[in-house]
Image (tube, rainbow, N blue to C red; front, side, top):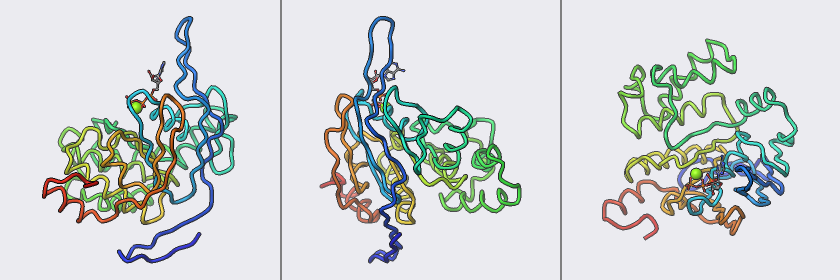
Length: 263
Ligand SMILES: Nc1ncnc2c1ncn2[C@@H]1O[C@H](COP(=O)(O)OP(=O)(O)OP(=O)(O)O)[C@@H](O)[C@H]1O
Ligand SMILES: [Mg+2]
């Protein structure tokens, strides 16, 4: 791991250490007599600390790919190594354990528990994975503060805005200290200003060394990532590196002036 301080004052952690490797993965759904091939032999390697966006049109296989990357789904064929372990060979309980330890998920529709307040939603994965109550008491307020929700700790999801709900979902995804955050259209239900705020949180997490993979169909959102994988009809069409937007203040200024993020 190499750490270097950049002009924005953050420590950027870079690493050649592979956290994830998807090898020749196929996902085939049987629909009666016919088959739907959602992904067709994809290969993706992700190193520690990368910020990756997966883009492509509707039906191109983005969610299927993310679910395979995140061990939510096992490919019909192929291998998926998470920190060197082939997760396609694990039984369901081992898979759940490794998923809980290594991966935090964020979804477009937030997926919060409606009857639990902000604090308890964030604490839930820690309770499931048997963290001690002392650690929970220390960590949950830190996470609430990290996503800027100090004044909302006792609110239920129904008493929060969409952006606030997604902040809770990000804090929850971070609660078990996973090595990767995976997000499927995390800004899909949010207005453009709130989307920027959510991306700002993800950019800052990346700067602190978290590995982040997001699925999006919005070019403006993908512009924040350092690597963009384009899917088409279930295959990887392109896998390119880019600078990635890291100065959120600049983006907000550009937005206010009514020019696209890439403009
Ligand atoms: N459970 C399923 N059974 C059958 N076919 C499926 C299933 N899930 C996905 N598919 C098909 O696989 C293909 C890829 O789906 P996927 O959800 O990965 O697309 P996507 O790129 O995430 O699209 P979107 O942008 O609309 O979310 C689609 O053609 C879809 O209809
Ligand atoms: Mg999808």
